[in-house]
Image 1 (cartoon, rainbow, N blue to C red):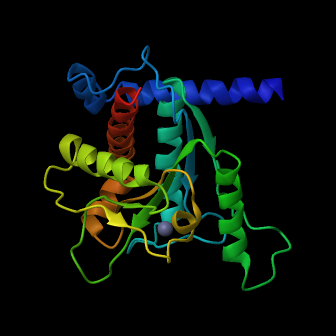
Image 2 (cartoon, helix red, strand yellow):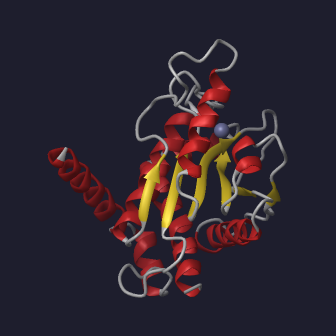
Length: 239
Ligand SMILES: [Zn+2]
């Protein structure tokens, strides 16, 4: 077990170093948007990062067949590395390509079983901030841009959603005029979450140009940094 932890720490540090050497990080750092040490947040120190879908559930897909689940995981891992090196406790619902459904879940209940398992992770960490990472799709339209949904069960959720939506606009997508949206009952995890909870639709896989960007490692790093920097700045200010 100790060996495993060492390897994971190394991988996490390696990923973080690669993220921190990106051009966007330099810009954010110079602007004072990212400070990695000192003045760490006293509340909401635990972040539950949920890479949507996984295993047999690929989620939506791009016109080239790129499954949403892969991109969700790639961005979730980068976010996890950034929060970890900044002193947060990070819990990931999945760290590889798998479903969280119980192996004996009856046919027709596999998706629900998967969602229940994710909710269970969240419930175990009642003082956490929940970030669910997804990709959007709206076939036959040129829709693009990140959009954040928030749970209506906790007042702070809308604030966190606005923080990410406006932060990504400022740092990465100046032409993004999308507004945050209150989750309807169709987003099960946000309907059930009691703690602050948001779902980030990182972009539209139905838009070929945006799909190409979302598959690009450098763009994934920039997106993860923009999301992280927005939230970290808010959480430092809250203390
Ligand atoms: Zn999804």
